[in-house]
Length: 304
Image (cartoon, rainbow, N blue to C red; front, side, top):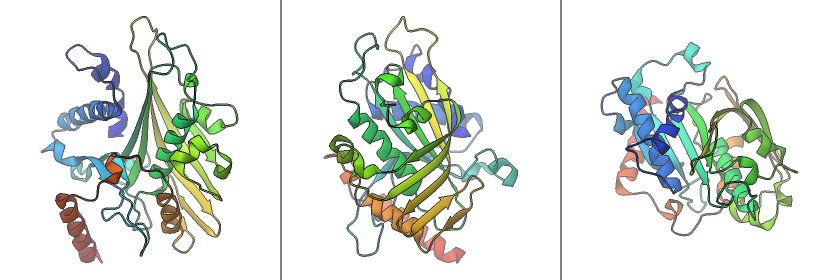
């Protein structure tokens, strides 16, 4: 719910007088972070910046499977809002969670000067978006039978999304930019073209169904460029199957799975997702992240 509030202030941060213009994805994440800080400040949260972490590791040790090679995959933004002390079962029905995970994609510069031309090659954008959806859906660590995490995908375009996304043959792309509750189904990923596989890897047999809620903040007219179509997708339910493994993270927070199903599916995806050279995903944990991992392990032992 806090991310949603911050999202609707994003056009002001991107275009308002006194704010710096943003041309890169990291700048877009910073703009949303600034808006989220304003939301937290409005609630008088002490040291609100302490709630936020950019480039958060999905696994603090990089390991998705015992004996496997580490993969330092990171989310663009993470927030721990447990200190607000407002959560209860009734509020959770509206999507409130203690941990907020967000990935972001900023698609721009390929739709012509007036934003009316289809991108020459839509496959890289499709692959990048799909990779982020898979990360959010299935890589967030879940150690209990109820999730504490909400999953958000921020995607912003400098033209109508139809100029960047391939709707034909991929109905999930259309569902991603349709306001309200939608269903997304991705399967047969082994048949995707090489340009998509370069980002998601080869994922034969993976079947993922999502129930999402989409929020939109867009322009009334486009006389003064740049102008942005801002979309926020909240993933409310995840169903995944891979061979004999299956896992469901339901809208009521309950997690049901086959024996070790979620971990097996996460390890399968993490081992195959592309890591771009010199991206944060190539960087092992910093000393402060290692300390955090040790603190979390100690806290888990106390709870047990």
